[in-house]
Length: 291
Image (cartoon, rainbow, N blue to C red; front, side, top):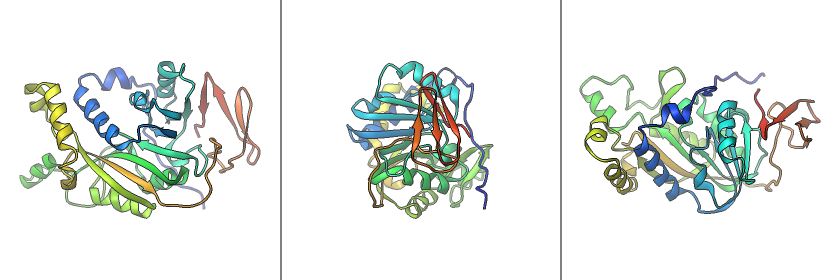
């Protein structure tokens, strides 16, 4: 049976750094607080899936090897321009449904502001579980439709997101909000063990951002992330999970996303799959696995 075609939201050609992030210093800072709490301070291999222009790459300074992967080549090019001088980084064009990465080969995987655009979350979780080593960490963020603001709107009959229903809601093309139970059940089915949660961006209200200095909001959010996590009422939830699995680890990196072969031959210009014959180009320091 042919694998279903899944749409991708890839931000190709969009100035994500200059067009989206100005004016969002609070959101950037509180997400970094959460990641510093959840990420090991150092480690072997880390992959950020949906890394964009590499906004969070400075948090990975003590990892031996860092893969930044995104479906949009223009985003990966921006990341390479910013970080290409650091030999620890590998820059890859690819997508979460067909990760061009070997099985049991990564210690840590991250998706931040990514599941928000994923139409088939169970498939994404299965792929991420595949590439992680036994007990490997998966740190994820998801947009929570059962956030406090939306619950209040619902009580006054003004919500279109159905905050208490378990199914995802697509409020705009390829923009999804999720109920906590949907995400947590999906993780369990994909054989992840949930270890910790943090409630992030709880103070992300336009009125507060206008009246209160960012530094105050950032400090307050950091203090609230842990104590309010069990309520699951923040618009952004961060989870730390572990991959439950066995088997030997792999030291190889690349896998053919077309046929699954994990023994690719690398030249100066391409990776060649001897099984299906597909050639994956290497251009300007970027491995391009775009299907």
